[in-house]
Length: 409
Ligand code: UTP
Image (cartoon, rainbow, N blue to C red; front, side):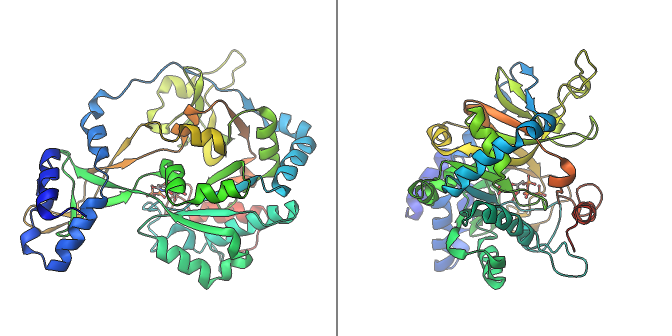
């Protein structure tokens, strides 16, 4: 670990020496904590932030071909057989991304611990395990599940699974790992302080999963087990189909290195990222980046061209993804309200965004891979996101969708 003098000179070189502003006022213990935290801080994000104005303009965007529900139904039996074969041979595992802060839902505790039940408890994690168990039963073996948490929610997530007996799933097939954190900066690129002995840090986005799997030894576990495909999915879709054999079989058959489940949007305005091609390679255009022209563009038959949204359920062929994971992925900047202390050490709870968080996005990895099968799902059966406290994509809308699927709550 660097001592004070070494750290000060390092920070000076980065223009971040304010991080040691309160050092002399701290107890010896807290001084060590601060030096340790600063030692763990990944300062490489600062260069990306400094050059953010020079963001590369987007390339030529064109529609992506989508494997539509009708075509899937015609070949369902063959896809399903291929997928079940791969599952029964242990060639696929699941990766649950549960490191997000879930700030929109505003639930105390990890998002997966939210109870969506009405007359009985039905936790989000429980729903996901139920769906995974259903596939495992069909595959005739437990499927390995990796769960990505963050420094902030790791202990609580593990304790929750323990307390609920892993909802009946065999714990020896569940592996937790913690994702990397990124610092957060003010408007001038200075790293914010949470307390006098701790810089602000936040999970580095859902795109950090693969490097964090490698760093935590999870990739080695997957390889040792002979896993070839990882099904990566978000915590907040309570109808999430996990290691879906039809999706897996279709992706394997397609020869693509990755697959993505997509939903047909309900209207051009729906707030989901849209799958497309950028300079001929897989890309996602976020709803807030979508121009009016793209949003409403139609082909000669009157069909919308950019109408398939991603639901954060992807398949990655491990070795293809591992081959590109160390390439520099774009860093995205989110303008957020970030609680911190000011130069005098006073607590600040902002009403307006006061700084920037850094995030990697999972779909930037798709762009690096050779091919992605866009696989359309029936949204009523598979898409019930819990994002917001009320309104669209809230517990209320998700409950209605679960009940419509005959799932008792
Ligand atoms: P969201 O983009 O909805 O982010 O995550 P969030 O942080 O959970 O929620 P808000 O925006 O604060 O309300 C999509 C998926 O990616 C995971 C989330 O846990 C969720 O499954 N995620 C997100 C991570 O695992 N790590 C991150 O750093 C961010």
